[in-house]
Length: 449
Image 1 (tube, rainbow, N blue to C red):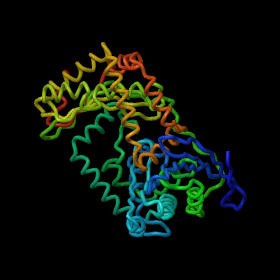
Image 2: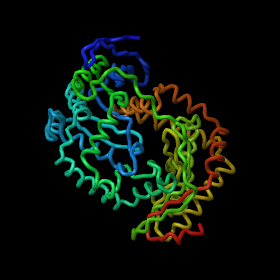
Image 3: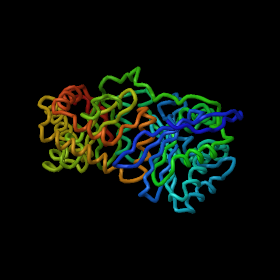
Image 4: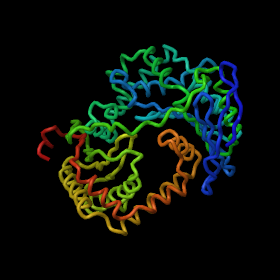
């Protein structure tokens, strides 16, 4: 274990603790440093690359909001790009764009990410800009009003996308009024009255060093990145007294889900959008590798059972797939289909029949082998760029408290057996299911289904 010296705001000596996590033959050397403040810095050095992806990940998302706060995390994500004590909004964007780089951010239900991708020689600039905007935004009242209008337009635009809206409707069907059942963006009713003071309070209470992970991947030097991060944060609200990193979000107590229900959003659309599914497993469940294989075979690609039966053989839908969403303490497993309104009954009947068939009879050895190959291939191919590798570092640290080496992950997938998949399928696919529908229907259209 290698230690390096630093200093706290109060001027006393402090030490940042660094260790090497892996020297992956499929990637580069991964190192992790815990700063005295509790903020963590992880890097993956990949000398063959000429770019670097740099991200600041905060362990706060929409599920951390109260009802009246709904949309605060997303609102804050917008505002942090609007200016700091050192830079205006234009200076933030132009600094990165002037070197051909790109910046963006996104909010999820459990975390928020701010990231930049630049040439390796421009990494010092990216670190300074991104750390500045996350740590020291001023949240100008005029900017709050401007972004409120932008977010309300974003919410309205989302309402015009029924293929997206149905996923939110399904989350509400399963989780109800729990924060996981709410919109990440908030609603017009919660965003409109939200004050600058409320957002500022959310910012300073939630954006604290122990809750933050900084990750970078590409042609870089770990020690240099740590030094640049410390310099960029010096004198900001994230330059705090010593603390320990926050533990990753616990898996207990488990989220209570609603009884199976049907929710219909009536809309005069040309296509009906339906999701049928149930609660799944959380992201730390050891069966998640078997779930990935099951999902691949059932509805994860063009060779999947649902795609072949509903689209290829019968031509009933253009898009049909299954998916799994996993959180710290719960999850979802569901099937989506987009079809003509007059074909909804047949699509739902075929979907239910296929789910029941797999629950009762399971998958074959050949199907499980194909599903495992899909899991391994998609994971490795997904690591072909610095952005995905940066995300892997941050998610491992933030969501799991550990970074599973690539070889170990592939071994875990290889270890999945036919019995593992079929036992999980029998449990998961036989559960009573909720239904979400967006299209030219009313609740009564599905009352007896």
